Length: 281
Figure 1 (cartoon, helix red, strand yellow):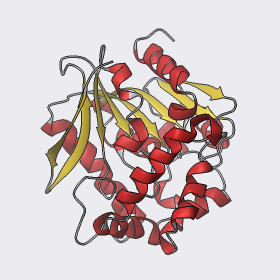
Figure 2: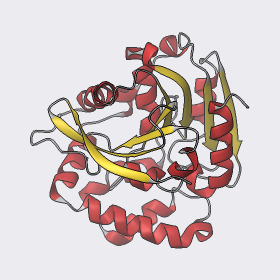
Figure 3: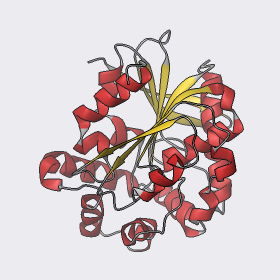
Figure 4: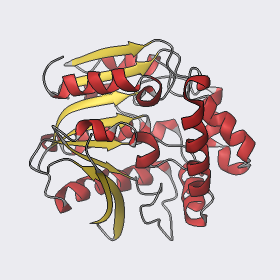
């Protein structure tokens, strides 16, 4: 298991906070986190990143508007503009770090942004993993609507309930869950983080993130889709829909797993992901 360092990187006119590990001469994997109150690259990926550093250079940024990345004084006023900012952020990050080409692992919102990155700059990316990813066609679930409206009444007890719903069985990771709750609540209640969260979800719709099937059909990259069978935030239907259109794709479904395969099925997630990127799957 390798060491993971943190630092900030200039991306346009603000600094992006990243976690980084592995040799820079190795193939790069960029891990893109999802949405939700207090989310960050650390909360999504800290338990799996060290497992990749022996063979890969890994980078996990905090998206603009989330985590410890600098927050805008005047936030974008709709979901389409937020999406554009985050697409540009990742391209600028790669340019600044001199990463010509990278693999992507995108969780939830990170999966949507991965697909949009392929629409904008397909030559910059190689293999793609989408985990519990939006991008497919599905009806918003009650759990997802609760997440999007959390800022309207951000109660700590409600927050722990919300995070429980990400998991199939929270008893399996109860100690980790308590740590995640505490870390994410502390981050969410920082004024600039809460302001960005409210701006992100106040005028946003799922339509803002839509990925046209016509675009998916033209994606030549090798894809692995990973989904928890019991995911209540982005249902399995999203990945099944994408499978209909992405030509070079395969789907792995974990039973007894919700939205966080990297936590509930950690060891299996790591092996599956490594095998895919090493061409052994």
